[in-house]
Length: 513
Image (tube, rainbow, N blue to C red):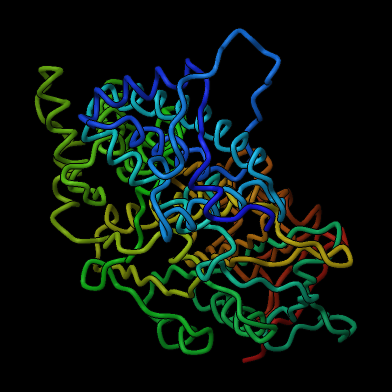
């Protein structure tokens, strides 16, 4: 290091007059008494970003330099100053910096940070509490991981492990062609394919048995987090121990996930998250909510995400209360939407103690048995899938090794018709977009009919489609497996199978009685 700490402390630092004016305005808002405090805050705000700031143009006379501040005031002494110096050097990505370099870098951070703080204040609507909470959110995101993700998804300890090896799964315990007896396996992350799977069949057809067998084998390739939704209550014993999963059973054992976590970088990000969360909640009921209800719900979620009382992590209870207030503001009487949300928030379905990065880096089985209401099941699934979608699609693309995409996360939905009928955007996004991020989705459902009303092209994103004996309509079966294929007369343990990379349908024996 070319610069000694004494030189760093003894130097003078200045920024542009416009940036200094913004810091002076912030000084008034925050009630600070000394000029260097908002300057420190501005420099820290800029350093929290991954990108280096643009250095000031010394030949530009349009914005003259403001009066200087001594390094001893701006950065403190000894330990504090050393920490500031280390942060500045780290932000530059250059090992050796001169005093002039540090002064220029400080000026650039100071200017950019002042601009950011001015926008932060504006987006907090001039509310001091909201402004402070916004900065606290940004600090938490920076400490958890990449500032750009908003979900604690950096290179730290919460980053989910990935599988970069070739993952090839036999289809069921037997996994062989019914005619030739040759092995039939699905190359999950092969080049040119898709990792997503759909396994269908009637009651006692063996669809869940096949899915569980494949997930066990997948986990045998290495540690990768698996999230499974269990509607019958049998996966806790059949699957959880083999994949190292913890079993959750909301509301008795709530899901420890902050489903309202968002990237609080700007007003647009908050609004987008509010819209997504609104969609997840509004699709809990089988009947569609009205436009007025939808707008009120979105505004309620938006207010909760913007301002958090006492700095606490927002919860669904806060959303229910905000919706009541929003209805009162609009002179609207309580209705089915407010009643449903108030009823659901009587149960503690989520305990928001884990960020999405923390939660989805572990394996879980979420039990949602039939003795729970349809609304409870849908709310848990909708909000969890939405959090998964927003988290995984905020990450950089997963590693590609010899053409294989590394697997980052696997989500298995048993009895998937429960969520397919809601047409949740998060599920479609996971199917269409998560492949490049290392996401794998496995849907276990009753029949090809369940996909008949799904979004156009939904099944086109499947790398593997398997269907056991079931009373399915001819149309959906033909669309998936081609002309002349029927599911009605299949023997027990046999199934029609289509692997995307093979582009043909064959009959297989997945298991034997």
